[in-house]
Image (tube, rainbow, N blue to C red; front, side):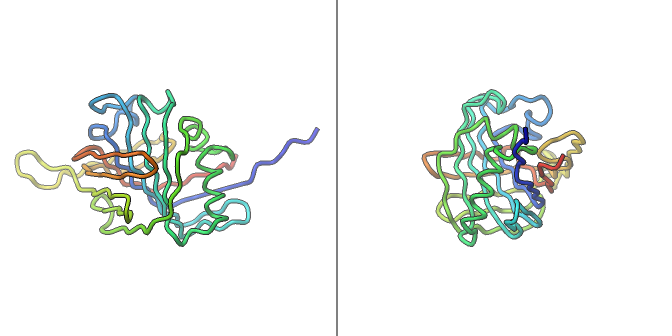
Length: 208
């Protein structure tokens, strides 16, 4: 009996990850948040430099997600609201919705997708300023994340920290820093000051 073939997809680009964990993010090192209350609350932005889902070109798409999990991500019961730039087409939105909810398989979304319920989708203008760990990711009418380097507690100078995570399934090399972020959409709201922030390059797909 023939089995259905899932649509092939691939995305690569830049990720902007702000969360309420302490610096470095406990989820990356031990699977559990090291936030003050043990929850995972995040604003994660992304740009697509190169990408395709079936016959839909994803290159040039910019988007973000507000994520709220009451405990560790793998324990589930999370909620997510997604935002895409107004230039994103309906076909691109449909492709992204299938990818991010894990319907098409492929890391990291086949693991992340089942852990949250999507509660909203908005189209809002997205602006990115700066670069690397000193980036600001702004969403009109929703909020923003402002990234900075960690600081030397004695001199106040930038303290540069990079995280090498060879087996990471979201990213493998991250520029770590401190971020302040606030965002509200579809009934979800996050706001934290000087918590974990990581800028990274990603390459995701459902290729075997």
